Length: 316
Image 1 (cartoon, rainbow, N blue to C red):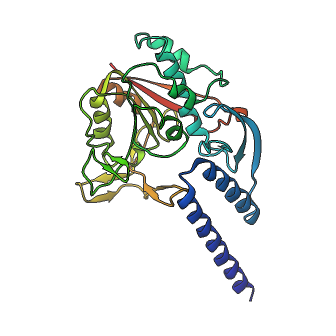
Image 2: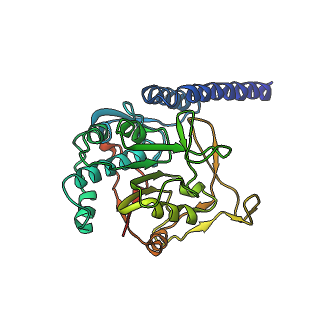
Image 3: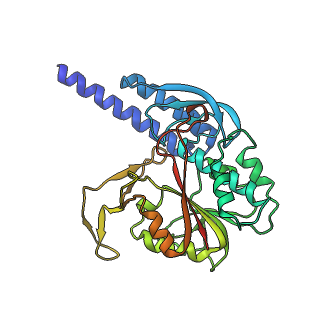
């Protein structure tokens, strides 16, 4: 009877989690509802599973508001803002973009040392990313992000020269599908030297042929164009490791146990093809980029925790 009771409890938990997942699926692209549902999910889930959940009052540099952060575990995917729903990683990407846009409107991209010092600034208080993007004065400055959700997307989508995309394998590249541009990072439809900034957030570990995608990004960026990149990085001495070895376009051979990253919003699981190390900087330099790492220390008051290294690559 005890085992039967445990089984019933387990089944009820599964039903609850499926129902919450459906709510995220339908409402997850609306940032306020996403944030509210995430808070509810984490709090209820922590009570049911006896997990610790902490709340922090602080400041979000992306939406530039005093906010409440929720944290269930200490890593870069936590510390969701109650206003913009951004986590620690997304918050830093938005902050970096904001600093770069402000820098570019005052200076030309001719002094990399000054840019690096600007990006190492820790004055988080200031305008929201949305406000900065709406007041860009540079003509024809084109920003591209292969994603159509999240706080960075929601902040930039009202900028007239912001382009976002998803990948629909059965559709023609460069065309619109469901009001979203269809692009494959392995084979971008953009012309050579046509984009000023490209933002990729935790995408390159999931690409079967990332080397080709990096070269495509180099091709479509203008001179002094910027690629803002996040991937889960290993230890400082860590080197790139392929988790799946490709034989051809359709067949994979397992090298290490297959790992997946799961998306809590749309319930999808993405296969990890590459575990990146800091030798990625050497590879990017070999392509022709001037690349460096911007590191941020943990700062719970500003919603920052985990491995907070962001790679900035500038096309020479």
